[in-house]
Image (cartoon, rainbow, N blue to C red):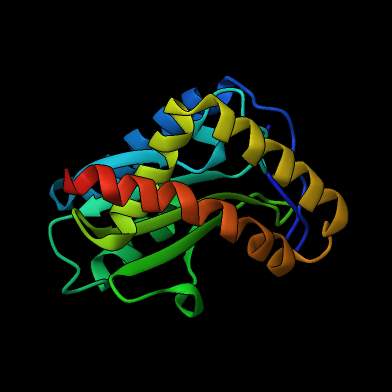
Length: 177
């Protein structure tokens, strides 16, 4: 049900079981990170009912402080997460969980509550949940890009970027009101 080959783009129809899988993983993350965790959110396309997605759960964890990342890495390693420091960004740590056959099953972002990373991941999910027309447009674009760039993950990501920009701009405007 989860898992996508590395460097491939495979988009599948939405599966309601993704919500349950997220809830189970969130419990494991809360137990591992204990008092460090503020909220844990299911983000990305697997968090949006009706939206086709790569079968990889995207999870964002907000913590009180990013001052020392070592405890996060130590706590997540036993759960199967690998810290991918080359994909870290200022204010964000990035982890990947892989299945025994080496397919990616989870992408985990750790950031402080209220940061840009937190806002953009949650705001984009919320926008798609509340705007059916934008959700359908995004779904069609993802299917097209997966078909035309199935072996070029970076081209797939770049193709989505412009469509993602508009909802985030609207979310920022709503945030300021």
